Length: 295
Image 1 (cartoon, rainbow, N blue to C red):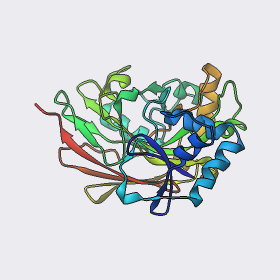
Image 2 (tube, one colour):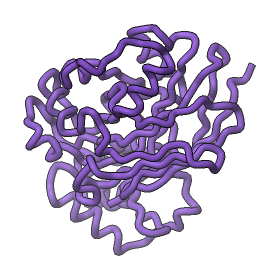
Image 3 (spheres, rainbow, N blue to C red):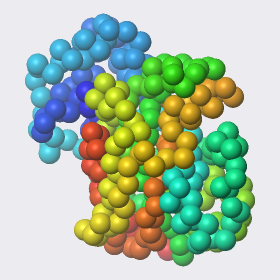
């Protein structure tokens, strides 16, 4: 199922070019309260078969053309957004060459994953949204990443059990300020990657059954219509199973938490007027615009 949020914060399921109002069906069946959040939708659907069966039954009911709805970020206030740092070999080399920062190649996997950082939910925008380039920076680039959405609480889980706690997957754009606080600086990621509009999510959440192996999907990005990034998630240094094992050994992962798994090589500086289009195999594609901050 492709679970989206649209229009007035309604939950829907996307099939072909139609949107089915599953949120209304879940409310009518008593699985959700009116005024639900997408975190509550995820938790209800992940909890048991009855709510998911109700949602799937809604796919036989009324629907709306996809082109007539406004897609929002599929979750706008996740409990946490955990972001992996420099998690593809080629991107780590790319950043080392660009910034002259420390060589991390001798670090063990847990030492690398200890560099996870948090992104604020206030930075979230949805499909078709606009990235605002802050006046303080002359160097902002994009990162396109596979992002896992947690469905059930996870504490001290093994890698073998890790994916059982995943509800589904979405695309995360981790927009990053490199200047003035990036190159050669440490402990600045939360700020540099936390500006308003610096986390784009979408176009929807694809449930885990539709993407059974997260370590073997293709990521593609076009910048102004030209290919800019192509990679497979098999090139990650630390895979999602390792991320969940590591994080859940430290803290409790909750329904709606996001784990975004790092960007491949191919990041590039953004300029006002740019158009981004990103695709992840088995999930979908989304576009973003780029503008300058109003003076």
